Length: 320
Length: 71
Image 1 (spheres, rainbow over the protein chains, first blue to last red):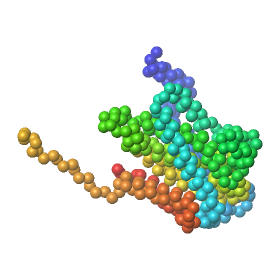
Image 2 (cartoon, each protein chain N blue to C red; image 1 turned 45 degrees about the vertical axis):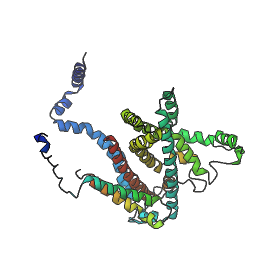
Image 3 (tube, rainbow over the protein chains, first blue to last red; image 1 turned 135 degrees about the vertical axis):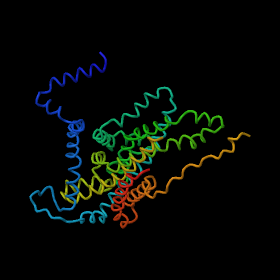
Image 4 (cartoon, rainbow over the protein chains, first blue to last red; image 1 turned 90 degrees about the vertical axis):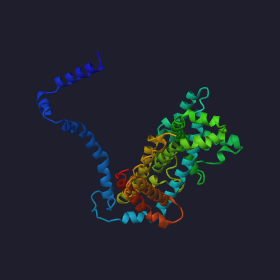
């Protein structure tokens, strides 16, 4: 049976199954109206789960509403929450912690991801197997990764401390990755790098595979060295893809919550308190709903702005 | 030498000057957004941090508007 006859058979079956009153009503609709009938549930769902909470959050950000006191009088406070957040040294500190985390994860993941992509692109024996092995961390749930690494970082029984001790000669129980003020930020950077470097590698690999072979052949004819080919061909042509990976990881890490919450919960002290952890504390520990709504809007606008740049970069890559 | 060698190449029609073109304005908006994000996360001045949200908001609004401009 051909595809067309299968489709017409299915259509006939659907038409027969439709109750007569409904069929009569549908027959009277224009194509445009039928299109709207199909699209409407999705639009309603989107409005309900995306747009409505956003508008409600914007409205709450201008009030003193507290979710743990739903019956208390709600008054309009104008932009007070915004000005408080934007002059609060503690929130500013959490932004710097976020910046430290975003900056180092981007640098390390980009360098490692590109290096891995460059190696995988060589197409050595068993490269397909190794690509799969490298991609495994990316496929795991952040909740699993967080708990798994918390166990690895245990000073007494953790494998991480044991390996560091083995190579450096240090006593494995002499340092704590999660409990130490200086090491805690790096413990999160290590886990995020372990998990997301494969993603950067994939994007870079796409960039490297998009470079036509004839460019390298022309460079060979001109006796360009491997080093020269890398700097003049490989890197410039893969750069839009690298930028894409940097932007995407930047946006994702700016919003980072799950790994930090599972590994350190923002501690020790506030050394790993990234913006999303501060937001959670304000919203669900201090119950300052209006204040945390304003904070959420500030983070939303920042991410939305970055996403615009991301889309622009993506379009540039697509037009290549 | 053939006659066609002397045929002047027709000049490409000059594009009319347009102030509101998408490309340059999108670049400006991108710079404003990036400046806002850097101001938000820099560790040097709380004054700059205070103005970061407004800068990002202006950049984002500008981006949305200028992305509707013709190429």
